[in-house]
Amino acid sequence: MNIGIFTYGTRGDVQPYIALALGLMQKGHQVMIAAPENFKELVEEYGINFHALYGNAETMMNSAEGQCVLQTENTIKLMQYFFKVLHDIRVPLRESYKAGFYKVDCIIANAATLPITSALAEKQGKKIALTYFMPPVVPTTELPLGDFDFLNFPWYNKLTYKLAHLFFWKFVKQETNEWRRELGLPILKENLLTHVEKQKPLDLYCISPALIPQPKDWESHHKITGFLTVPERVPIIADDESVMELNNWLQQGAPPVYMGFGSNGVGNTEKFVAIINQILSSTTERILFCKGWSVFGDLPRHPNLFVAKYVNHAQILPKCKAGIFHGGAGTLAAMLRYNLPVIIISFYTDQPTWGKIIERKQLGVHIPVKKLTTDKLISAIGKVQSAAIRANVEMISQQIRNEDGLKRAVEEMEVFFGKYNQA
Figure 1 (spheres, helix red, strand yellow):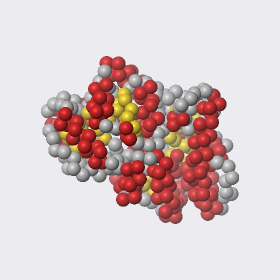
Figure 2 (cartoon, one colour):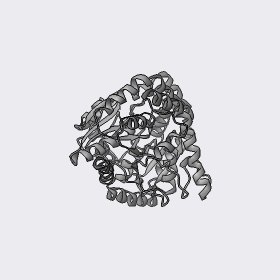
Figure 3 (tube, rainbow, N blue to C red):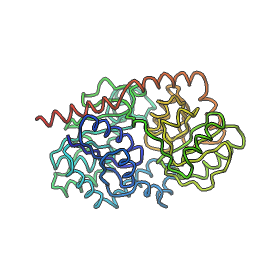
Figure 4 (tube, one colour):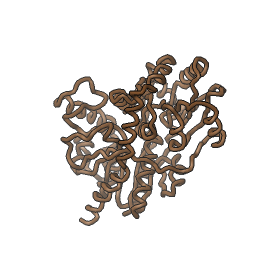
């Protein structure tokens, strides 16, 4: 099969698809990843065909306006900014999607692309499978949506998903119907999610059932499969420091704390620089700090601090004692896979939900970024080293390694697309 994977967003919205693409390619399928143009090098390094979708996600995040929004640490304002940027570039962006669709026969899409990909798939008569790397938004009576977990009983739980779906439709309704009119499709009077659900697409949540078990009242096309993990490879450190310097630093002292926020984007970098300075001056903790997409100014020079842009998780995390990060699902999977207790400093979207989950399962500590202080972070670093938390992490780590989420996702894709190719 000739399969196109369409995704838009940060590195966490792209990297798991590299694993999925490689898994599908090993089964003999032709695969293309379509993503923002700044991910071309990352994808092609793995020998995967790449199609550029218009726009540069890193530039969007680090623009003056993007930095102002990040500094508010407000989920609603961030979503408004994200949709505004996409609206401003919608004409060339849609054309880049359309060009990508012509290259493939089957479509795998993430949630951020749904207003565009669902309409194109409908217009071109191509089957689409949906994939997510966040806590489920499929209605169930068993548990509420993460942001509404104040109560937990059946009718309330269902209502929380309905409210989230209405909120999503409010943001995308105008763009969705404008695009459908342009394609010659009927405008939607019902929620896009309701419209797509009627088609019963394969709907995979590529997260660990050890963290969120699959609800028993879901229909069969909704599935929780396990995390998608990119195969281990030669480490890459996209920074001035060399691999040898990092390895030497790691060998010079006790295992460090990993601290990084990937492509999440940190608006108030001064706050984090001050916290790092205070930890270095008041403790003996060693910190491996990964800047990711964020632009940090005056990071201190200190023998207990090593700064990189990125590191290879498979090579480095086993040499650390704990992980401090924003709570993205991909990084969470890597942390737990390599037996690291975690400290989630959540900013927005699904990150607070993952923070609540790891606290509930006693795998680490959750600190919302607005409540972050040096004292709280130092206390959390000590707490996650407890025997109880380390034992829980070790147990979950083994479960995640045994799940083989990639194998199951590939099998589900082959069954779904194969069935329709034979029809």
